[in-house]
Every structure is written in C-alpha cells, then in structure tokens.
Amino acid sequence: MPSNVQELRPKTDSEKITINLGFVDLGQIDLLVQEGFYSNRTDFIRTAIRNQLDRHNDNVRNSVARHQLDLGLRHFTRQDLETARAAGEVLHIQVLGLATIAPDVTPELARQTIGSLHVLGALHASAAVKEALRDRMR
Image (cartoon, rainbow, N blue to C red; front, side):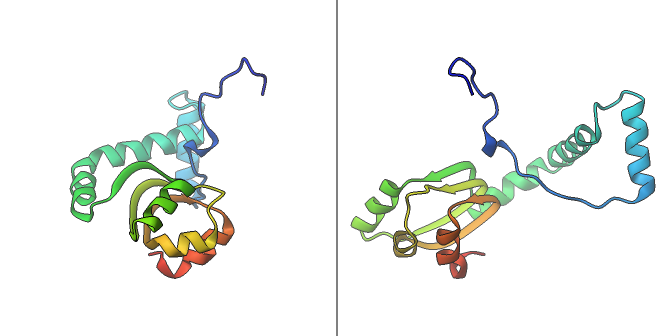
C-alpha cells in the first residue's frame, strides 16, 4: 500500500462466517437486493444481525457485567505477559470481541502466565500459542 494511503478498516475488523439458508429465504433476500433495499446479500445479513443485537442490547450488557467480560479489543503483548510473570500473577482472560496475543509471545510464556482463556468472538494468536493454551480455553 502506498505510504500516502491509509487503510480505513484494519484486517482484524471482521471475521468471516458461513451460514446455510433455505432457497426461499435466499430468494427473498435476493429480491430485496434486486429491488434496491440492500446493496447485496451481505448488507442484508449484517443489517439483520445488527437489528437483533440492538434488540437484545440490555441482555448482552447484563451478561457482560455478570460474567465480568472485557468488551471490545484486548491485546496482550510479550511485555504484558513478562510483567505478569515477574509479579507472580496468572491471568484469567475473558473477552467478548477480539483477543489478540502478540506474535512474539512464546508458547512457554503463554502457559506460564495465562491460567484460563474465554473468548466470545475471535482469538488471534500463533498456532503454537493456541495449541499450548488449548486445555485452558473454554
């Protein structure tokens, strides 16, 4: 990317999912797209999901508080984990959104400092770190 161009949406802004729909539902979506109500199928599906999330907003907020989840993006650097290890702390990570563990975190450091990992959304970490923490994920 040229230096004068700024990416507006980082690659970590979304996660791809796959859904199966019946032919009639899909046809109705295509009709709404054809009639100009939505720009494409994805626009319709995103709108429907956002409407459902808005409808259940109070329930989500109450659950986040009850389960003591960090909401949004939570990034753990090697320095964060080394600081926790030096202090003798074990982290119990609970995130609703995106949790990232820096690429330079070793599997050994992750196992020494992360006691449990609960992510509702997406976890971005190296395959080796994910494997090292597999028994600590729920």
